[in-house]
Each structure stands twice: as structure tokens, then as C-alpha cells.
Length: 299
Image 1 (cartoon, helix red, strand yellow):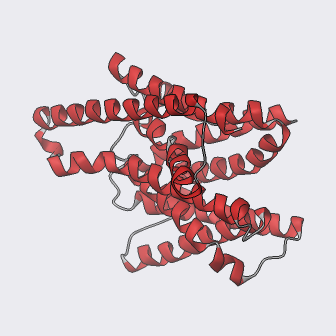
Image 2 (cartoon, rainbow, N blue to C red; image 1 turned 30 degrees about the vertical axis):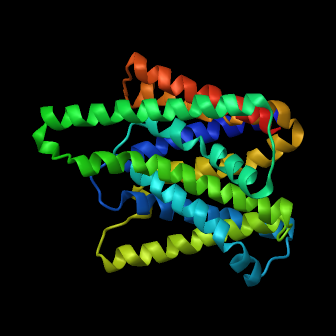
Image 3 (cartoon, rainbow, N blue to C red; image 1 turned 90 degrees about the horizontal axis):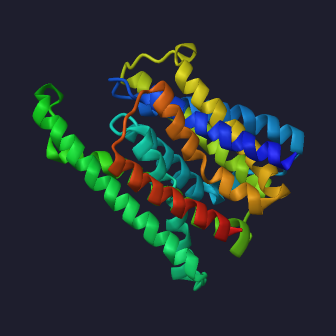
């Protein structure tokens, strides 16, 4: 069963990335917030079902205690949704998936953890890959600015577009670092309670954001947001199978799941017709190699 769960997690999160891109590439100003609403809604439903089924004991204190972690994850995801409006999925996904590097560096800094030599080789691959991809993306956007004045892409906007996946990477890495403190180093909260706390916090975020859109008179129809619903469902399903996959055979599951952006890249070629140059493929390959090495070392 663990290998099936591994493949399902890999598939669900890869497909979720595709739906995130489709749901956020339009001209709508609040597409990223609408995506967050849908994810929060689905997670809230799942949290309720899981809570009833698992009979986990949780209180408002647990929600408040886990709030810093939840906010890191939620803010990183919303920033990631926003970035998908400007960047190709093939560029943003590998950069975002390097958040584990941030986590590792934080543990090295604060807990004096040590790693084998291959770990630092992986960091070097990822660092070079991100810098290389970023430079190529900047050049591409500057070229688009010259050939298509209607887009009115300024240098400031060009720079900001790259900050979205990098911001996701940093915040998600920080959230994972805090998770390590809460669940492992200090054991401040149980795993089931943390999952419920996170998903209910996301649901609360969705409710507040929905009220904000109402105040802004922004139209939002749940059943018309099919792409966002799809992303939310696949994201949540991935979380469900992830736990079972890692508890079965983490040594094999981790590198497979950690490489789900490969599926995102393939799907973006097929359905979104995104095209990359050979140099961009090289940069992405370096990042992916680093991700796989870290996934193997992590277990």
C-alpha cells in the first residue's frame, strides 16, 4: 500500500500545481485570494471529517499555539498562487520546491545539525540552478517588455515576479522549520492536532478572505471556480496520502514525492503549451538534482 500512496501523492500534488496555474493565470486581480478560499474550504471539510473519525482532542489553545506555523504555510501558498499569474509553472515550481533547503539551513544555524558532504553538493546545485533560472527569466521578461508595449511590464514588476516563488520558498521553509520545533524538538503539539489546527486556520483564512472580497464587491461564485476547486481537492488529497506513504517506506517515498514538480513540468508542456529553452532546461535540471539528493539524505 505504501508504494501506491507514494505514487498517489506524487500524482495529486503534480496535478494540483497544474490546476493552480490554470486558476491563477487570468486577468482577475483577486485570483490568488479566490484560490486560497477554495483550498481553505476543502481543508476545513477534510479537517472536520478527520477530527470526527480520529477522535483527536484539540482546543482553541492548540489552534493559537500552532498559529505561527499555520501562518507561514498559508502565506507561502497565497504568495505562490499570486506568482503563478506571472511565471511559467515550469519556472516557479522547481524554485518553490527548494524550500527544504531553507529548513535545513535553519536547523544548522539554530540546532548545530551536521550533514554529509553530498548535502552541500545538493545546496550548490540548487543555488546555481535558481540563480541561472532567475537570470534567464529576467532576460525573457525584459525582451517581452520591448516587443510588446501593451503589457506595460516595468523593471519593478519584472523583479517582483521572481520574488513570488522565492517568497514561497522562504516562508514554506520557515514553516517546516517551525514544524520541526513543534512536533520534534520541543513536542509542543501532536501530529493529528497540528493537522487539524492548520486546516481549520486555513478555513478561517478562507472565511475572512471571502468577507473581504464581499466588501470589495468582487464577484465570487464557488461552483464557477472549477479550476480552483480542482487544485484544492488535489492538494488536500496529496496531504492525506503523504502521511501513509512516509510511514511505509520513507527511503523510497521521499525522493519520489519530492520530485512531483517533474510531473508538473510535463503537464504544463502538454496542457499549457509552455516552452523552455535548453538553458532553462539545464537550470531546472540542476534544481531537480538537488531536490532529489536532499530528499534521499533527509531520510
